[in-house]
Length: 584
Ligand SMILES: *[C@@H]1O[C@H](CO)[C@@H](O)[C@H](O)[C@H]1NC(C)=O
Ligand SMILES: *[C@@H]1O[C@H](CO)[C@@H](O)[C@H](O)[C@H]1NC(C)=O
Ligand SMILES: *[C@@H]1O[C@H](CO)[C@@H](O)[C@H](O)[C@H]1NC(C)=O
Ligand SMILES: *[C@@H]1O[C@H](CO)[C@@H](O)[C@H](O)[C@H]1NC(C)=O
Ligand SMILES: *[C@@H]1O[C@H](CO)[C@@H](O)[C@H](O)[C@H]1NC(C)=O
Ligand SMILES: *[C@@H]1O[C@H](CO)[C@@H](O)[C@H](O)[C@H]1NC(C)=O
Ligand SMILES: *[C@@H]1O[C@H](CO)[C@@H](O)[C@H](O)[C@H]1NC(C)=O
Ligand SMILES: *[C@@H]1O[C@H](CO)[C@@H](O)[C@H](O)[C@H]1NC(C)=O
Ligand SMILES: CC(=O)N[C@H]1CO[C@H](CO)[C@@H](O)[C@@H]1O
Image 1 (tube, protein in one colour):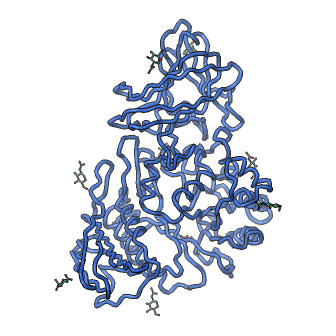
Image 2 (tube, helix red, strand yellow):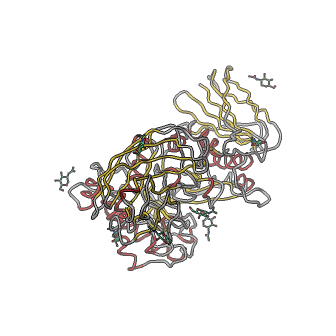
């Protein structure tokens, strides 16, 4: 599940690492910029780069200045400076013919990790676009900045304007305007099946006008206005609708697209006939995604570089419509949107954003799924092990967000720890046992920039220093469960009841999987008998009850060992352990 929270998009998985490059959001000012040399810098609204990017950076040079001057951008609490090749894009306006030096420099050390010259010939009346790339060496830390320098002699007493500076380390699958390769690859290791996007609260907006608008996140980035996100920082929307879908395609995930349902975060609710134009907007979005290129929006998709329709088969109507005052009107809002989608696209699976029956239509149309979210203590997750055992089998379930967010004493969990991750594993075993109706489950939030986080814990995180990408203990639980999937859940007979050890067994072809969690403080020996099997592996994740993985200090990862036996295997589960036996 992904939304831009904790700078998980801008400053996180999206590849562009400079901040405030389009002066977006409510009060951008000169955030992340600094003057270099005898110059003044300012946000210049009288020289907009485009209709969408309404400001540029003005760099005024004091008369008589010589040498190279310019400006720095300090990124999202530093620029990640790695030994790799960077792509760099910018616009320039003003009279200048000569060298521009692009650099990656330690902000305190002054060490130059990359320095690259290009020759520009800039027009005084319009912005000229430049693209270049250069190699860098690696900085030992994240305290770095990107610099753009020019010859002051040529500009002294005058000024230059710069627009939408963009810097990308290598991107996932080499996409233009793509994801950061290192961050996306770390996520891909989980082998995720689907991506729910773009929210989450970030879909909703503080008012209807502030909602995530699909049509303002497409096309050239220079034409995307961005917005103040719901997590109170600017979103550039460089990670837009098409980029989410390339992400799905490149990672082999089914897109689960959330559409706005009329609910805002405290800014009122649109329902009834007033919702009509927004329903039309959803149909326009679907035409953009699915329509033939002879349609208005299908043609726009092709113009934006994607001729083939996107394989969008699942739509979620809103986000958490049982809260924020949404419950009373959700049945009618859901029905209105469901009918519009279902009439034109009968094969699309529509998902209601809540499982609370009091907020849903009295009779939910057949084929509709419902979403439920759980942010709980470890003990509560264990108590929810049976949540779906006796649930009606009529409508599939999507556990669209879950994470252990507090300790059993109610304290806030900043870093996932073994007890919480073990509680999640017990709950996930319950989900797998009910996978006839529980179709999908996604931990949330996915990702944080450690310095810019407003929600914890997150599945993994990073900052600007090298090797900062850190998987939480819950990341490794997700990875263990996802990469060891059977296709059929099997019955298990046991000589003991569930707790503290929980289990679920499955098979795919000739490989049997037994997932185990020990939610307890003593070691447990489990003997597992599977007729006809002889050998395989055990992967085991364990640690002290409250131990966590920290940036630059990952101590808890799955340990793999080989096992053999004639149909009988002993697995020793330490206290607070999650394990998978996979044997053939
Ligand atoms: C820079 O700002 C200072 C302080 O406001 C001002 O005195 C100076 O004239 C400015 N210089 C240029 C080149 O704009
Ligand atoms: C870049 O240009 C500057 C100014 O002309 C020069 O001093 C510097 O040596 C050049 N750097 C490289 C890497 O060519
Ligand atoms: C996007 O669509 C909305 C209607 O939902 C419209 O008001 C807005 O002008 C559109 N934006 C662009 C850039 O076309
Ligand atoms: C698009 O629609 C037109 C008109 O309905 C049809 O003639 C054409 O074959 C369609 N193209 C594709 C690629 O489906
Ligand atoms: C809304 O649903 C969530 C689960 O998705 C549940 O935890 C919460 O209690 C519900 N709130 C209301 C007011 O129904
Ligand atoms: C589910 O139903 C069975 C049989 O009626 C009952 O024994 C069990 O306690 C129920 N479990 C839950 C979690 O309600
Ligand atoms: C790493 O984390 C462990 C606990 O998980 C802690 O005991 C140890 O001191 C940490 N090491 C460093 C270098 O911070
Ligand atoms: C499993 O452990 C039990 C008890 O220690 C032992 O009797 C048995 O031989 C072991 N089985 C295997 C396959 O190692
Ligand atoms: C709690 C917290 O750290 N919030 C930060 C979230 O990110 C924005 C900027 O991206 C910061 O301004 C907040 O302080």
